[in-house]
Image (cartoon, rainbow, N blue to C red):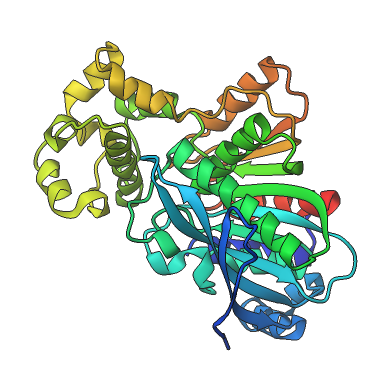
Length: 394
C-alpha cells in the first residue's frame, strides 16, 4: 500500500505531465564537437523549490528535496532528418548542493502542441518541472527539446520518427558530456533514460541507438518507458481495421504521424490520398491541429486501408515499419509500463515489445500492466515506479 508521501508524488506528476533568470552566456572551449553554447537560465535553492512544491502540492513532497539546482539551456550540433546540419537545444539541470558522484538522467518529453512547453524554457507547468524534481533529489538531468522546438523551432518536428528523435537525442547527450567535462561536474558515469507517451517511444529509440551504435559512450544502468507506440506497424493496422476512440486530441497525433512520415520519406502523396471529405478540407486548412471527433478509420480514405492490407503501397508500409522499435534485444535493465485501458496508445505496443524482446533472449526487461489504466491515469504510477527504480540505481 502506498504511503502518503508517495501518493503526493503521484498527484504532482499527474498534474505536471497532463498539462529570477539571467543571461550569462559562457564561451565554449574550442575542442567541443557537439556543444555550441550554454546559458544559465536560473538558480533555484533547495528551500525555494520546497516552497514551490509546498504551495502547489502541499508540504509532503519537500522530504525528497536534497539540493538546489542550476538550470541551463544548451544548444548543440546535430543533423536533421534530411541530413543537413542544424543547431538544436535542450535543458540541463545540475544539483548545486549534492555531495558525491551523481547519475545522469536523460528524460524525453511527451507530445507538445505548444512551443512554450519545450524543456529549455523551464515552464513550471511543463515536464521541465519533472526534471527539476529529479535534480533536487541528486541527479544530473538532461532534457532534449527535440527538433522543432527551442533553438530549432522554425523546423518541422519529426513527430514519432525513430531517427529524428533518437539521433538528435544522442547528440544532445554527447553535448552534455562535453558540458560536464568542461565544468568538472561530479558525474558517476551512470546514465538512465526515461519518458512517457511520445517520450516513451523517444526513449526506446534513443536507448536502441545508444546500445547499437555508441556502446562505449555511456554506462546505461536503467531505462523506463511508459505507454509508447513502439509497434507502429501493428498500431496502424489496429487503428485502420478496428477503429479508435474518436477523441479529437488523439486524432491530432495520428494525423501528425501520417503527415510526418509522408514528408520525411518523400512519399509525396496528396492529402486526398489519406483523408476523405469533409475531413480532408478541415485538415487542408488546419493541418494536424484540426478538431475531428471520429474514429480514425472513418477519416482515412479506404484506399489507404486497402493498400496497407494488400501490401500494395510498399513505400508507406516501409516508412511505417522503419519506426518500429520493439523487436530487439536490450542489454540495459528496462522497465515498461502501460495502462490496460489506454485508448490513445494501445497496450498491445508494450505486450508485443516484451514478448519480442524476451523471445530474443532479453532477461532484464519487464512489463507492468496498470489495470484499467488510461493513457492519462497511468502517468502517476509510471513516474512513481520510475522514481523508485532510479533511486535504487543511482
